[in-house]
Image (cartoon, rainbow, N blue to C red; front, side, top):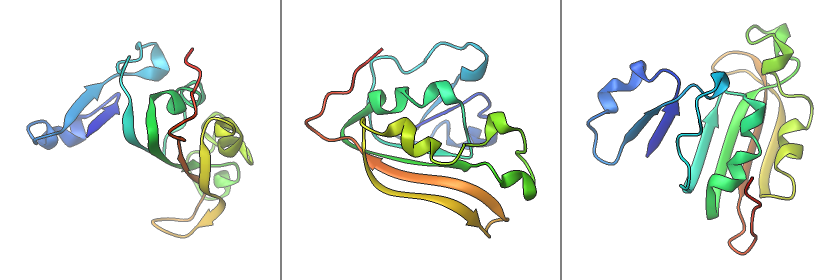
Length: 136
């Protein structure tokens, strides 16, 4: 497992766990992509949106790999943070960003009640084992 974030201080207890790699990078403020040349069988993204990263996800997903992504969407401002549109997906944005590169297994856009009320988009998609994904 590889965990990537700008601040991993909350998971330092995992640093010595077998099979766990912690990678610190601030992708939003100019850190270079720290995982060049690597692919992953599964990618999980939760409560995070950095739009320039979206096209890269199919590229780093191994053939046959699974992507699960969930984050806040427009309308969430009625429930709390984030409220800034820069951090809220537009309707259908996540689906559109991955169209053509991955096969969508499930997609949702709506209001959830737990752990607190929020508007989210969720997607589960797979990379076809025979389809090439263009690499920038």
